[in-house]
Length: 72
Image (cartoon, rainbow, N blue to C red):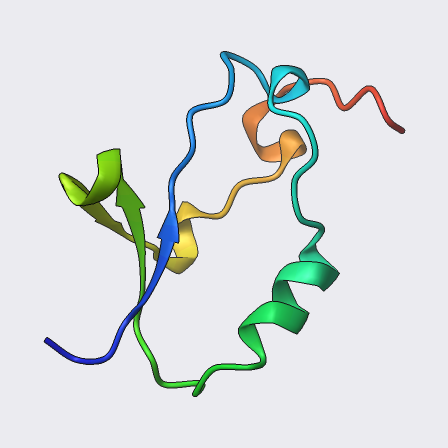
């Protein structure tokens, strides 16, 4: 297997408000900048029982989903 970067998937709640603090886009970019830009990234779920890919079309905003963003 190529040297990959795994992001552990957490199940903190049934809606974003229940999840507690999460990284901002800027914080995530800063963390990812420490890795080789060609290293593959996977989501790691259930202590490595299942894995998931991340693709460009997997990114959604609150507007894309038609949900209210209460912070604005």
